[in-house]
Amino acid sequence: MPEIRVNETRCKGCSLCVGACPKKCIVISETFSATGYYPAKLAKKDCCVGCAMCAIICPDLAITVYK
Image (cartoon, rainbow, N blue to C red; front, top):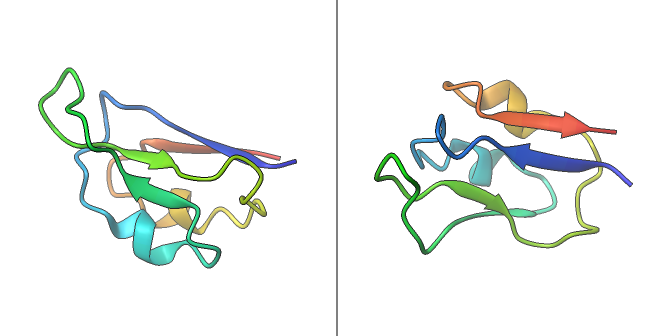
């Protein structure tokens, strides 16, 4: 099953990935990262289809998609 991993030190919580995900698998975390932002995170474990739209749209290259 595909999954994404968000590098919390790079993510600035812009939420572009949230809007780009066709399955709505990504949400913004409710807790701060070490850099002081609310990073994106995978909301549902088996939701991701591996389309990589989130990684493509991320301006900070914080998302990696594993297929």
